[in-house]
Length: 188
Image (cartoon, rainbow, N blue to C red; front, side):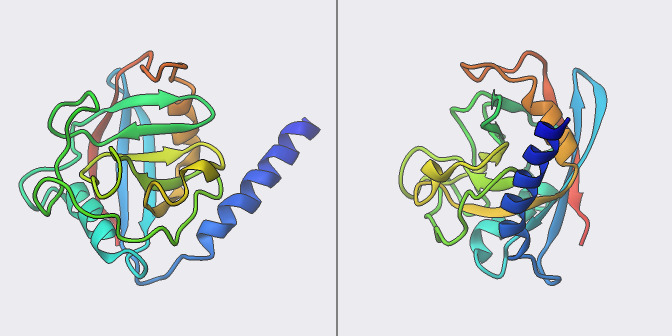
């Protein structure tokens, strides 16, 4: 429909703000997602290591599992349609836990990257300087998160998978199905 194509144009314009930050030298990682044990597809993300090296390195190493722990077999525990999909609680799987490669939590590195549209990858937190492994992916522009959450990457490929996951959320955030990162790692 005309309305939908206009919406996609708006999405594209907003996402391009993140794409403008893209660098060939940045790490690229992936999640393979399952919904109730059915394959849902792959989400490929670029991490803005040139702006946020510590935040990007934490996420990258949690994707590869090279420190002996990471995102593999963790779930998206909180999904709010038209807003965001949150996961990465690798210790409790319910939003109360999480652990960074730097020990418990680490500082807000920079608020330079804004939540300009869908597909932004950002750190979930419990206030200033409380980043661990929990992250979220935006489903739309979310300016109210700027200067509160550290955005550090974007979805390069597989935004259709993210949108599908987004449709499995509820107002209170509890997903209607189990959404698992069945595999993850580094592409580049």
